[in-house]
Amino acid sequence: MTDERIETGEPDGLERLWTPHRMTYISGEEAPEGGYEKPAGCPFCRAPHAPEDESLVVARGESVYAVLNLYPYNPGHLLVCPYRHVADYTDLTEDETVELAAFTRTAMRVIRAVSSPHGFNLGMNQGSVAGAGIAAHLHQHVVPRWGGDANFMPVIGRTKVLPQLLTDTRIMLSKAWPS
Ligand SMILES: [Zn+2]
Image (cartoon, rainbow, N blue to C red; front, side, top):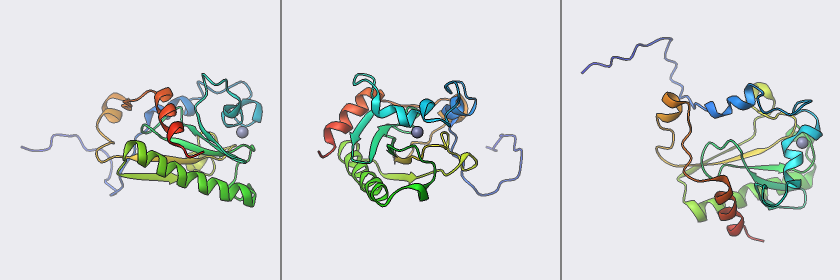
Protein backbone atom coordinates (compact mmCIF):
# COMPACT_ATOMS: atom_id res chain seq x y z
CA MET A 1 0.00 0.00 0.00
CA THR A 2 1.35 3.40 -0.92
CA ASP A 3 1.34 6.43 1.30
CA GLU A 4 -1.39 8.64 -0.14
CA ARG A 5 -0.68 11.75 1.89
CA ILE A 6 -0.27 14.81 -0.27
CA GLU A 7 3.19 16.11 0.62
CA THR A 8 3.65 19.86 0.60
CA GLY A 9 6.90 21.52 1.53
CA GLU A 10 10.38 20.14 1.97
CA PRO A 11 11.03 17.62 4.71
CA ASP A 12 13.68 19.06 7.04
CA GLY A 13 14.18 16.22 9.49
CA LEU A 14 12.69 18.19 12.39
CA GLU A 15 9.91 16.92 14.59
CA ARG A 16 6.89 19.13 15.16
CA LEU A 17 5.17 19.67 18.49
CA TRP A 18 1.71 20.99 17.68
CA THR A 19 0.15 23.04 20.45
CA PRO A 20 -3.10 24.48 19.11
CA HIS A 21 -4.45 25.06 22.62
CA ARG A 22 -1.98 27.94 22.83
CA MET A 23 -3.92 29.83 20.16
CA THR A 24 -5.92 31.57 22.90
CA TYR A 25 -2.65 33.20 23.98
CA ILE A 26 -1.52 33.97 20.47
CA SER A 27 -4.84 35.42 19.38
CA GLY A 28 -5.06 37.37 22.63
CA GLU A 29 -8.64 36.25 23.24
CA GLU A 30 -8.07 36.02 26.96
CA ALA A 31 -5.61 38.88 27.33
CA PRO A 32 -6.66 41.36 30.00
CA GLU A 33 -7.17 45.02 29.23
CA GLY A 34 -3.73 46.59 29.02
CA GLY A 35 -2.22 43.26 28.03
CA TYR A 36 0.07 40.89 29.87
CA GLU A 37 2.97 43.34 30.04
CA LYS A 38 1.85 45.17 33.17
CA PRO A 39 1.85 43.41 36.56
CA ALA A 40 -1.83 44.31 37.04
CA GLY A 41 -2.77 42.19 34.04
CA CYS A 42 -0.08 39.56 34.57
CA PRO A 43 -1.45 36.12 35.45
CA PHE A 44 1.82 35.16 37.17
CA CYS A 45 1.63 38.20 39.45
CA ARG A 46 -2.01 37.47 40.23
CA ALA A 47 -1.86 33.67 40.62
CA PRO A 48 -0.43 33.64 44.17
CA HIS A 49 -3.31 35.87 45.32
CA ALA A 50 -6.14 33.83 43.81
CA PRO A 51 -8.84 32.63 46.22
CA GLU A 52 -8.12 29.15 47.56
CA ASP A 53 -10.96 27.46 45.65
CA GLU A 54 -9.79 28.89 42.31
CA SER A 55 -6.06 28.67 42.90
CA LEU A 56 -3.84 26.44 40.80
CA VAL A 57 -0.82 27.07 43.03
CA VAL A 58 0.80 23.78 43.99
CA ALA A 59 3.52 25.01 46.34
CA ARG A 60 4.85 28.31 47.70
CA GLY A 61 8.45 29.14 48.49
CA GLU A 62 10.21 32.25 49.80
CA SER A 63 10.79 33.88 46.42
CA VAL A 64 9.24 31.47 43.88
CA TYR A 65 6.10 29.36 43.60
CA ALA A 66 4.84 26.46 41.49
CA VAL A 67 1.53 26.73 39.65
CA LEU A 68 -0.28 24.49 37.18
CA ASN A 69 -0.29 25.72 33.62
CA LEU A 70 -3.84 26.66 32.62
CA TYR A 71 -2.97 25.43 29.12
CA PRO A 72 -1.11 22.20 29.87
CA TYR A 73 0.74 20.08 27.34
CA ASN A 74 0.25 17.13 29.66
CA PRO A 75 -1.32 16.48 33.07
CA GLY A 76 0.99 17.86 35.73
CA HIS A 77 2.53 20.51 33.43
CA LEU A 78 3.50 23.17 35.91
CA LEU A 79 5.38 26.45 35.95
CA VAL A 80 7.90 27.65 38.50
CA CYS A 81 7.75 31.45 38.72
CA PRO A 82 9.39 34.13 40.83
CA TYR A 83 6.86 36.25 42.72
CA ARG A 84 8.60 39.30 41.24
CA HIS A 85 7.52 40.52 37.82
CA VAL A 86 10.80 40.05 35.95
CA ALA A 87 11.22 38.94 32.35
CA ASP A 88 14.76 37.78 31.93
CA TYR A 89 16.64 34.93 33.57
CA THR A 90 19.53 37.30 34.21
CA ASP A 91 17.15 39.57 36.19
CA LEU A 92 16.78 36.98 38.96
CA THR A 93 18.61 37.49 42.24
CA GLU A 94 20.93 34.74 43.52
CA ASP A 95 18.27 33.59 46.00
CA GLU A 96 15.59 33.44 43.31
CA THR A 97 17.91 31.53 40.98
CA VAL A 98 18.71 28.94 43.63
CA GLU A 99 15.10 28.49 44.73
CA LEU A 100 13.84 28.29 41.14
CA ALA A 101 16.26 25.43 40.54
CA ALA A 102 15.30 23.72 43.80
CA PHE A 103 11.59 23.99 42.97
CA THR A 104 12.19 22.57 39.51
CA ARG A 105 13.92 19.54 41.03
CA THR A 106 11.22 19.10 43.66
CA ALA A 107 8.54 19.35 40.97
CA MET A 108 10.21 16.53 39.04
CA ARG A 109 10.40 14.35 42.17
CA VAL A 110 6.76 15.04 43.08
CA ILE A 111 5.44 14.40 39.58
CA ARG A 112 7.52 11.21 39.37
CA ALA A 113 6.11 10.03 42.68
CA VAL A 114 2.48 10.62 41.73
CA SER A 115 2.29 9.87 38.02
CA SER A 116 5.47 8.05 36.88
CA PRO A 117 6.26 9.95 33.69
CA HIS A 118 8.88 8.50 31.33
CA GLY A 119 10.69 11.81 30.92
CA PHE A 120 10.43 15.59 31.23
CA ASN A 121 10.82 18.73 29.19
CA LEU A 122 12.24 21.54 31.28
CA GLY A 123 12.86 25.05 30.17
CA MET A 124 12.22 28.72 29.76
CA ASN A 125 11.21 30.56 26.64
CA GLN A 126 12.92 33.94 26.78
CA GLY A 127 11.04 36.54 24.72
CA SER A 128 7.95 36.27 22.54
CA VAL A 129 10.03 35.34 19.52
CA ALA A 130 11.27 32.27 21.42
CA GLY A 131 7.74 31.15 22.18
CA ALA A 132 6.97 32.77 25.52
CA GLY A 133 3.20 33.30 25.76
CA ILE A 134 3.66 35.74 28.64
CA ALA A 135 7.16 37.05 28.05
CA ALA A 136 7.06 39.77 30.71
CA HIS A 137 7.12 37.39 33.68
CA LEU A 138 9.58 34.54 33.41
CA HIS A 139 8.41 31.02 34.10
CA GLN A 140 10.16 27.68 34.03
CA HIS A 141 8.13 24.91 32.40
CA VAL A 142 8.16 21.44 33.93
CA VAL A 143 6.39 19.13 31.48
CA PRO A 144 6.06 15.43 32.25
CA ARG A 145 6.25 13.21 29.16
CA TRP A 146 4.98 9.74 28.47
CA GLY A 147 5.80 7.57 25.48
CA GLY A 148 3.11 8.15 22.85
CA ASP A 149 1.73 11.28 24.52
CA ALA A 150 1.97 13.25 21.28
CA ASN A 151 -0.74 11.47 19.31
CA PHE A 152 -2.86 12.42 16.31
CA MET A 153 -5.48 14.39 18.23
CA PRO A 154 -3.74 17.78 18.27
CA VAL A 155 -3.09 17.52 14.54
CA ILE A 156 -6.47 16.24 13.36
CA GLY A 157 -8.75 17.64 16.01
CA ARG A 158 -6.88 20.76 17.20
CA THR A 159 -7.41 19.21 20.59
CA LYS A 160 -5.02 18.17 23.31
CA VAL A 161 -6.33 15.21 25.27
CA LEU A 162 -6.00 15.76 29.03
CA PRO A 163 -7.40 12.97 31.15
CA GLN A 164 -7.37 14.88 34.43
CA LEU A 165 -8.99 18.10 35.62
CA LEU A 166 -6.61 20.83 36.82
CA THR A 167 -8.20 20.98 40.26
CA ASP A 168 -7.59 17.25 40.75
CA THR A 169 -4.01 17.53 39.50
CA ARG A 170 -3.40 20.40 41.87
CA ILE A 171 -4.67 18.47 44.91
CA MET A 172 -2.62 15.41 43.97
CA LEU A 173 0.61 17.38 43.52
CA SER A 174 0.25 19.69 46.51
CA LYS A 175 -0.38 16.72 48.79
CA ALA A 176 2.80 15.06 47.54
CA TRP A 177 4.91 18.27 47.71
CA PRO A 178 7.30 18.13 50.72
CA SER A 179 6.55 20.91 53.19
ZN1 LIG B 1 4.04 39.35 36.52
